[in-house]
Length: 119
Image (cartoon, rainbow, N blue to C red; front, top):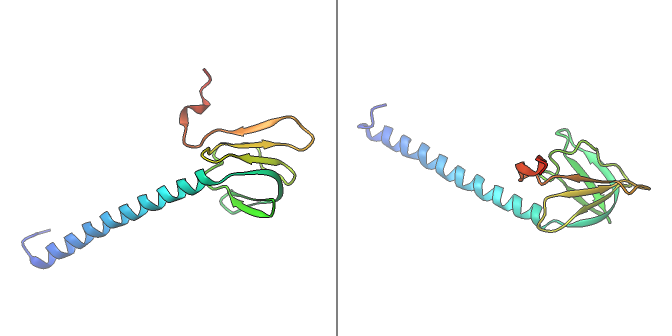
């Protein structure tokens, strides 16, 4: 590309500008999404549970639906109706307690890749 042509310079600047603005917008949305997930808190029995086509669980607790996208990453257990699900504010980990059981299933913090190491 010959940048001596004024039209080519304008197109080049517009493309670079669009990429920069798109990157800024994407970073802002990612930050807002993380803040929303960190601010979310609930504790109670799952009244209704469904998984979308991507396998992301949506649960209803105390009449309010929660989308658990980004909070459950490495959980081998599928949440079922009747499970007690706990998520505390400022923590991305989810605790699941099966009905009539003392077993607690923990999902590790999806942002902490070192959580799977045993020390």
